[in-house]
Length: 214
Image 1 (cartoon, rainbow, N blue to C red):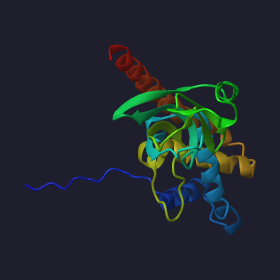
Image 2 (tube, rainbow, N blue to C red):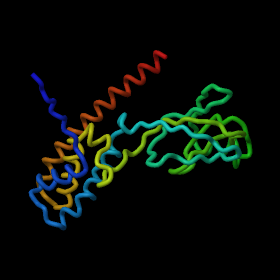
Image 3 (cartoon, one colour):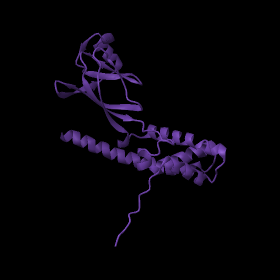
Image 4 (cartoon, rainbow, N blue to C red):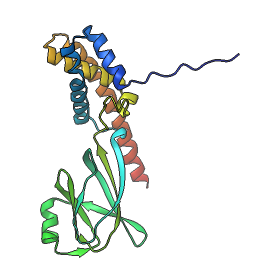
């Protein structure tokens, strides 16, 4: 006897739009045209509330000799750690405040193997001392998940937290419509976010336990 597996539900950008229309029981152009905005606002809301494993990324690149300012990756949100490869081995680069870096190597005048890094601005890091050669480096960071769009049908949130995306988008729609039913969707959205935060707390505890055992 041959059985056919039922495919698991995967939320997409298009199905999210359709689901929102069905929940609202409206398909008038003025509202439908706002749904992409509701989705975007929901994604920003979630990004501000949680840091999940799905947002954790690793980037590898090469520093430029004589330049102590390094561009951050697109959609960067928060740096977790940085290391540098020197003589074939990886060495940690330690986080310090901008003021400390400027005092340690004023205006980038001191060159050598970078020991410290910090935020120069939202789009750049500052390292000290200034690299004296093109060092390879690796950064672990949290990013804002690739936004949904008609040409990007799925992302980590649609695959792992479809309920948060659906109820978060509906909540934004309720706010737009000034609808009293927003409390219902707020409760469902809050429950979905609480579940994600619980998972994230568990992963953080596992990471700390591994670090202590290492």
